[in-house]
Amino acid sequence: MSILAVMKSQSLFCALFYEAVLQSFAAVPGSAGFPQTVTVSMRPYKGTRPVVAVKVNGAGPYDFMVDTGASVTVLDTALFNELGLRAEGSSKVTSSAGASTEVRSVAEEVTVDCLPVRNIRVVSMKSPMTDSDYRAVRGILGENFLRHFDILIDNQHRKMTLDTGGGVANSLAGERLPITFPPLSQGGENRFRPMISVTVKSYGPARLLLDSGAASLVLLQWGNPVKGLMDGMRVRTLNGSMLCESSIDRLYLGKGTVRDLMMETCQSAAVKPQDRKGILPTAIFKQVFISHTESYVIINPTKRFSVPREITVVTPLPLGESMDSRPMNFPTPVSPLK
Image (cartoon, helix red, strand yellow):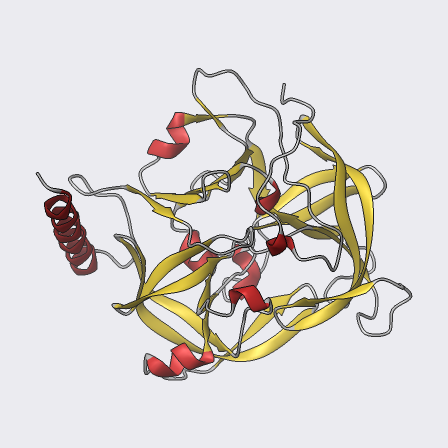
């Protein structure tokens, strides 16, 4: 069979599967006879943040950044208007720098490859991507889409796998680190943000947001993000900015240790004085598996029955230096998982 014939056959199968799901389910469960796992390539951007092709209401595909740190899916205002979505009220969008109120709507379906989620809330934001290298990105794929799947983010090979049947989870080994979600009311948008417990040598125990949209590890401390005591650089976020200082520290993650890790300490009005919170980017690891089904994460998983590997990180660059100006590299491994 020719390559063209194979491609046509795959496209037809995907279309048939997509139609069957839309007729039968509000979200995407696994069904016998249909693919429960899809693997998609990340789009060719210079940076480490994962960007994939996404369709909205059958239109597209458009480039969306995959962001486990975002509770809701975001559309650029121009795309929101192009799709003819109607404003159905407003939603509070929260980032580390603060919160803003944005127009919201409901998309009939948002689709990655053959896997759709129907009737999904989206918000409109003008230029949600602050980095100039990501200007072509039209939206952010948030946890209200991602939580329907187990996800393998493969930064080393620039691929992402979505799974609805447990097959990927059963094929992987590694320490299962529990993830929790904020104890908010059912109507709270931030209830889907996955948190993981770690210890930072100079900071102590902390709960970090597992964030595929972040570029470096961030520790948050209460303070005025505009007129703070820090002399560091200002970092822009989705809806604001923070004053931050850089340092090198050690991170204890389950039974593993990450040494000489660049991190930022930032002042934020979005946390309370007693809070010990921050952001852990998935981009600093070779692979991250997130089980939304069982609420755990595996850092650098291995195939079952293979030799355990060490935790390996991508060293973040100093604050203010572009991460997109250097090629991807994975430095010498650090302490192994027991």
